[in-house]
Image (cartoon, one colour):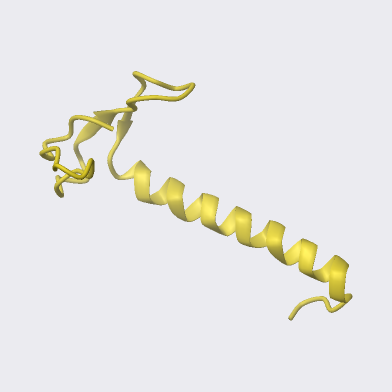
Length: 68
């Protein structure tokens, strides 16, 4: 992602910028889409929770224990 006031670092990461800033998605299907930088960590948390749920469903199918 580019923009939002954060400077591009050598390792490809961005320096911290204001969460009210915006940036553009650099690649992938939504390339060029402008997004709020506040939306990025929220999206990461949502995806992490979704994948944890998938892993939990698989574990339940394997060991039969639910709600653990």
